[in-house]
Length: 303
Image (cartoon, rainbow, N blue to C red; front, side, top):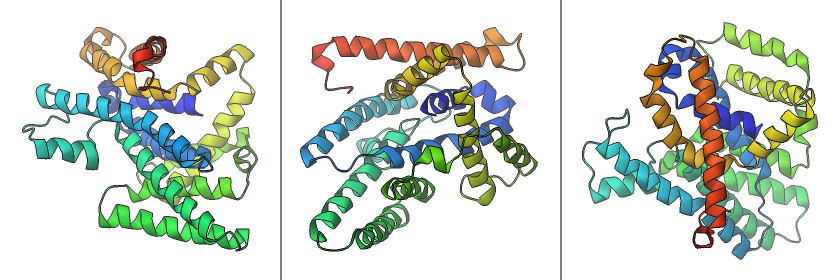
């Protein structure tokens, strides 16, 4: 799933695809980031000791601060869509800490959600050891929902939509529900996916059409996975475990792809451009990750 999602993220950053096929971009947007957030909520481990959790958070925070800083500076100097005309200290800190610009907002959201969830879980479980497990779960979800509402509506630091998807992942995980059984992999889910295209004007990740589409896509892709050749499975799993470095470095590669997209005008569908951009971004991201890992001086940058 993460392999498919990171490829979809790369496609979102290809300007030609977004401009030429806006409906494709809309469906990818509806599915990609909400599903990424949902999986993040499902997979996050809050049973770590505080020192271990802080260490894992730093492994996300450090690259975020570095890459977002680079992107803000680039947005100020280069004529891109998210161009920043005036870059003052206040504006810089606003983009870096409150409202990220560019593709790295996901890391900002992930750090915020994980930290809130860990703190609430830590104090809820510590203070209510004598209470029933079900009671603790209800208290935690209520507290989590309240804080997420405050952070999103009160301080505008977090998208309420993504907070809902993140919480949904938490609820499923804490109720010990196997997501692979709940979202049963089956070919029949192609039917609601096709139906979703009929309601394409109304589809959104938070309404019934979007939720149905996202759930169906997960089921369908899990079905596809079971029918993949072994070698392709291994490659997809390998890419799925390296989504962070690919995500961090892919904007540099997609920027180059956008710059030289005129070389692919012979293909109006954008297929060759898309395959090229994905291949270069994935391979380049993993190579850079390997180079960073070999350098002991930068071992703190990526886990």
